[in-house]
Each structure stands twice: as C-alpha cells, then as structure tokens.
Image 1 (cartoon, helix red, strand yellow):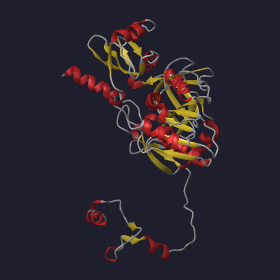
Image 2 (tube, rainbow, N blue to C red):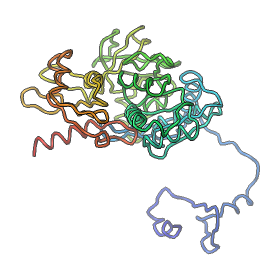
Image 3 (tube, rainbow, N blue to C red):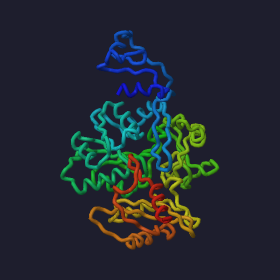
Length: 412
C-alpha cells in the first residue's frame, strides 16, 4: 500500500516521487506524492519527444544461468531495432495474418525476439504465462497459431502431449516451428516435422546477442546444424589463443553483429572477458562447415563447462545425447560428467523413455557400443521422468544441478 511505501521511504534511496492514477486521498498528496490527473491539467498538452541516443540502454535481460549465476546483459535501443528489422524480414518472414504462439517466459530474450518482429509487421503474438504443453497446444488451437517458438525441451513435451491426446487439439493452422535456446537433436527435429507436419527453423542466439545469430533455411534444416549466419552477423570459431580455426575444427564460438549488448550490468570483469572488439565470446564449443571459416553452417558441440574429460579424452555430451535419442524407446537423453578417481570424469546418462516404453541400462549400453567409441559410452544409465529433471524457466536442463546431485550422492 501507499502507507507502507511512505513508511520506508528513507530506505528507498532511488525513489523521488510517487504518482497515483486514481482515488488519491487529499491528505496523502504532498511534494512527493502526486495525482496523475492533476499533473495532466497543470502541464502543457504539447507532445515533447524524448531525446535519446540509439545506443542508450533499453533493457537489462538476465542470462539463464545454466552454468552459473545469471548475468544482466544491457541492450540498447539500436539492438532492439536491428533485431526487429532482421528477424521480421530475414529469419522468419511473416505477414499481418500470422499468429505467433511463444512458449518462452516473459523475462527471456527469446520472447523479445518473438514479440518485436511480430509487432513490427502487424501480426499477433500469443504469450503463455507459464509453459505447459497442454496450455501451449490449447493456445494454438484456440487462436489459430501459425508459428510456435520453443526450446528443444518444450518441443519434446509438446510431442509427448500431442501423441497421447491428439484428439483434443487442432494444429492444422500451424505451419512453422522455431527452436532456440539449446541445440536441437536431429531426432527431435524429425519428430517435430512428422508430428505436426510443419517446416522448422532452428536458430542460435543468446541474451548477449539480443537476436538470432544463425538460422537454418525454412523447411530445410541440416540435421545437427544451427544454420547459417543471419544477415549483418559474423561468426568465428577460435582456439584458446584467439586464433581462427579452419572448417571442421572445434573451438569457442564468437559472434559479432548489430545485436551484441553493451555490457554486463555491474560486472566490468565479465564485460572485459566476454565482449572484445565487438565480438561476444560465447563459451559454446562449435565448428563451422559448408563455407568459409567465418561464413559456413554452424554446428554446436556443447558448452565448454559441460565437456567431459575422461582419461584424457574429450567427450561432448551433446553428441552422445543425439545418438541415444535415436533409440526408438528414448524420448530424451541428458549426459553429464561425474567425478571418478581413475579417469577424472566419466559420462553418466539420464534417460526419459517414450510413454509406455520400458528399457534396461544393458539394452542402451549395447545400443551405444555398436557404433560409439568405448570411452564415450555412458558408464551408467538412470531412468527418470521428464518433469523431474532440474530446468530453468525457459526449459534448459540444468546439467550443473544434475552433477551436484550426483556428487552429493557419491560423498554421502
């Protein structure tokens, strides 16, 4: 209440004035508390445009914190303008007849990427307060959604819900699927196309980029690839010394374009470490193929922090996960590295099975060993429910939480 705010006013060092819009008691007006209607009467009706620099800050959006504490990325007005222009006309061409259903939460940069370009062309946006697969499918059915934007985990939930309750939903208006937020397993991509009969665009972006950095060609994604650089964007893959690596070699992905943010709020050390000469250093391991070393297709390998080093061998969990999800009984696979006295780390898999399916660890281990190098095969398989996996609000599985839980079990 107003009384509560006034009682702690001395502690609110940044608060200068309070403007109330209705039912303002006369005894509460002061040199700090104002009636909005009276302010309108007392001031000129001339419209005065606010002067600002395109590089002025427009937002502070926080990273998802999948590998640590969330960081505030400061975006400018120009970042958002360029995002709207490029996304609306280059990434996902839309008309004012389209209706975009977005599964991301309101604080996530992907919602900004969904909303601004959509409004830019006069189309409609349907937002969901909290993602639930049945709620998302209801929204598509009720509003005639033409696009759905969601993270790979969200798509996994949608497929599972639709497979079990397809008679409840009408998805005939849906013609485009977008996936971003994490690498989309090739098997999940295929299942999206088969389940919903839609073309899919896989995108790579980040809070620090305010935009889509790479995207696949509509309806023709290359399995395992996050697509080609979006117009006005550059990408490169570097080694630990900052040298650009040739095609096919794995290193850290760096991105440069009109969406790269100004800074990390209140963190000059992180700003200096990750934002250099216009390039954002992502912490993602990737390689480029099918073009030049800076203009080919992007293939995400994993997060640097998620890589498993087992007996001197580098294991990229995403590669193992993508293979395991090709098993017909597996809906989703998550692989993490856990401590081992001999090997340093060993890979462990958490498996979500398809509805009604049963499987054993031995069955999946045999499946892996038929194709995979022995050191990459998970040493153990835990079968879990999808809803029990720790995840961010945007649907990213928190591998660091899985590692922490496993370490606590080992040390108990």
